[in-house]
Image (cartoon, rainbow, N blue to C red):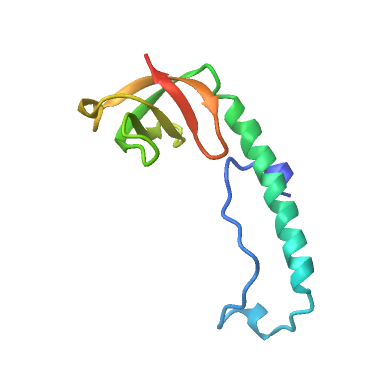
Length: 117
């Protein structure tokens, strides 16, 4: 189903009982090892899909709302594109709060990197 839907991203967690839900009353007949295996398979499938989805932005120019300084570099900024992707790029603090055009030059696991145009 994950491959069929092709989500850009997903939040995934191993099952844990939640009081008040029908499943809370059911016997848990899946071993921890099997839960871990299933989670890792699901995570790999989603990462592959996410990478393929992000590839479509390579060499494209996106409008990005500059939201802050990157946590990884004082000379880089970060923001969200109009398609709600995290984009990191070199820039100056006077761009904070502005919308800038950024050409995407690289793709990482969860974000895009680019250059201001």
